[in-house]
Image (cartoon, rainbow, N blue to C red; front, top):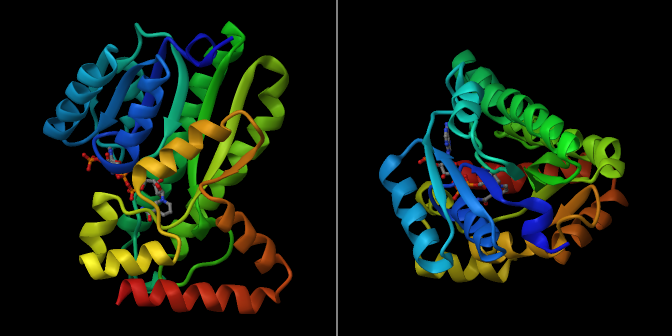
Length: 267
Ligand SMILES: NC(=O)c1ccc[n+]([C@@H]2O[C@H](COP(=O)([O-])OP(=O)(O)OC[C@H]3O[C@@H](n4cnc5c(N)ncnc54)[C@H](OP(=O)(O)O)[C@@H]3O)[C@@H](O)[C@H]2O)c1
């Protein structure tokens, strides 16, 4: 079975209007899947969908939805109710930053809703359908921030950890039923959102690349190269090596080192 026979005819990428999500959409389309795209910004969704049709000659479906709203999962499921989705990638995230006790309750709950509740609802819906048809794939985007506590991004790291562990558990539950699930551990990626937040200049970009930062297309391509190979995929070998090295160190050292980096990104 080739990629689109196993994971097509439709892929759904949640958080697909730009950057990494758009790159996942292109990766699925390049492998012969039609693509449904979810995000908030209609103009960017349409631009990405146009590019997918032009470049890959696939069908597209745009679903404008804010994942932070209570009925987000229903909106997404209603939007694809007539499509046979064989690949589901949950890429969108909110990233509250700042000291935990100074973060509003609304923001903390939005973090749980967008990063935990909605992916849980959608994963459950798609996993059931994929088991029924005997094939499919689910990718949940996690982060290096999920592998240890992360100062000033504490709630975000905890939520990304939920996605990581959920995907690993489902890999084991579903692997004998034709459904591949992978937690995708992502490191620094030069997405438009990342660039906006950190005000990345060309000099800073070169520095970050020298420290392992990836372009969104690189990160997405790697996902497709390794998808189906196990419960946890790494966006690069060096991320995995970093994690292996950290496992040998005292936990306090690992958490504090991450805290130095995350505090620098925040201030
Ligand atoms: N960038 C990094 O350095 C990095 C590092 C580690 C992990 N990650 C993980 O990689 C994934 C993508 O990262 P990213 O945010 O930098 O890049 P991105 O994929 O370039 O952009 C995020 C996408 O999600 C959509 N989105 C965000 N909030 C949404 C909401 N409330 N409702 C609907 N759609 C929403 C955005 O579109 P709209 O704005 O149009 O809604 C956009 O299409 C996330 O899971 C993140 O945790 C990223």
